[in-house]
Structure formats: C-alpha cells, structure tokens
Amino acid sequence: MKLLQRATASFLTAMTLAGSAWANTSYTVGIPTADPYTRFENHVAPGEFSDSFNFRLSAPTSGYIWLFARQDAWFGFDQVEDTEGVSLVLVNNRTEREYRAVLFPEAQRTVSLLEPGVMDMVVAGFDPNKSLFLSGDFAAGDYSAFVSGTATGSAGSSYIAKFSFAQPVPEPSSMALMLLGLGAVAWATHARSGQRKPS
Image (cartoon, one colour):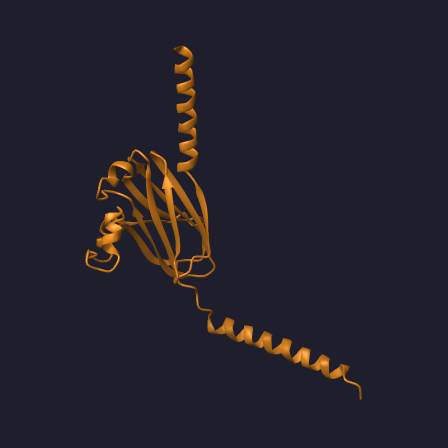
C-alpha cells in the first residue's frame, strides 16, 4: 500500500513539474506585422500560468495585442477548459514602461454576436466581449508581453494572442540616402563594364 502511495505521489509531483514547465513558456514573436497579424494559439495546463512573448520594434510604430482566453464556453466546454484572472501586460525592456490591456469593449466597442465568425468564437469559449486589448504608439526597442492567469478547467485552458504592428515607413531622408546609394552602385557597375570592353 505504501509503495502505491509513493508511486502516486511521485507521479503527481512529476505531473505538477511538467505542468509548470508547460504553463510558463517564452515565445519569440519575430517581426510582428500589421496585416496579416502574428497569431499564437496556446494550451496551458491546470493552475497558474505566465507566458511571455518577446519581439523587437526597429522604429517607432503603432499597433495592438488582442488576447482571447477561453472562458464560459457553451456546451459544457467551460468544465474542461476555462480561465480566470487573465491579464496582459506589455513591457518596454529598456525603459521598463508598462502597458496594461483592458477589456475589449472598454477599449473599442461591444462586438455583436451577429457579426461574421463571432458566434463560432463565443461557442468555443473565445468571446471578443471578454477579451483583453492593448493598443497605442510604441517607441523602438525590445518588448515582452506577459499573458497570465489561472487555468481552472479539468484540462487546463487555451488562449489566442494576436500581435499586429504597422511596419514603419522610412523617413524621406532615409529614402533619399538609400536611392543615392543604389544610384552609386549602378553607376560603378556601369563604369566597370565600360572599362572592360575591348577598344
């Protein structure tokens, strides 16, 4: 009997450690673009989780992060996968400035169930009206977005994170320098090919 209890305790400890590793993961977003956005759909083990998403903005730009955590799904999905206490915080790693997401309707508008695709999301537990939204103008630099909460379903939970940032448009002076450089390369290539021709 004691052997069985020890084996069960060891198994539960291993599962807890595996769940912790599974639930606290760091991702590299790469270069998020405005269209199409960069999308992650992740599953987290039961219990508390905190995932981070790291990316770099090469120039000041505007954009948003939109987080849909599975919660209160229809047809009993909420017993299997559900999330409580969800938060989304973006940090500029150089200045340590924090940006906190707010409930989507507060940030933008309430989403109607009649809009295309919305009912399917709600049935699956990803209700836009319970999503978190973070938007604004951001300086160039390295950023980390932290998604955290508690997965209360028997199978943990899932969330969808969308990253969308406009590609910075080069300044006119940068464009002029780039065109000047290309012109110089073209002229040098033409001059070399002219020197090689037999007379």
